[in-house]
Amino acid sequence: MPIAENAAKIEERIQRACATAGRKRDEITLMGVTKFLAADKVEEAWRAGIRCFGESRVKEAAEKFESFKALHNIQLHLIGSLQRNKAKTAVLFFDCIQSADREEIIAELAKHSAVRGRPLDVLFELHTGEETKSGFADMDAVFRSAQMVLESPHLKARGLMTMAPFTQDTALIRKSFRQVVSAQKELERRFPPKENWECLSMGMSNDFEIAVEEGSTMLRIGSLLFK
Ligand SMILES: *Cc1c(COP(=O)(O)O)cnc(C)c1O
Image 1 (spheres, rainbow, N blue to C red):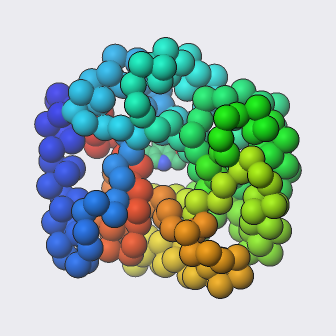
Image 2 (cartoon, helix red, strand yellow):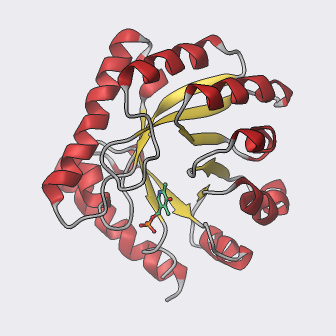
């Protein structure tokens, strides 16, 4: 299927979910997740109106996006787990690291981001039940990490990210998203201003409507967009 057709169908569903939830469509960004896909799919998605892209590996993203990013005004986010020895390269290519999931990696990002012209956006990934073990499981570690990001002149806290469990059980998915919203409230209280925490990156191909209903501001869609 042409990506533009898939995008139009997804767009319709997002608008319907917004109407159901009483939300404005412009509060939500649709990210195209292009991991494992060839560069021509990135081009096609761009022509279909996608302006925010997610990749899960630093090397793959660098190869695919280096020249594309120089020519197009897009946002590129890292959504996969970051290894420490890749942080130095990651800060050069990504506008946002959504998968910040441990203090060690935040220290590494803070150290290397000084070479950037402007601060690097960071989201904290929370583990809320997905099968893989990625994400913070412990809020105290999130608080310590938040402190580190807010103290760094080269990093900018933006909010939270999660992957819900891959299941048909919508109650479980909802629970996972609500956990993120409750963490957001706690962070807003402890580390104002609210603006530090306004991005909620949650919702994938199989659960994005629930995510919209629960307050997501960024949907990360791969398989449904590129099928
Ligand atoms: C692959 C991936 C996505 C996209 O998943 P789909 O189910 O293909 O939409 C979103 N977020 C993360 C972190 C991913 O790794």
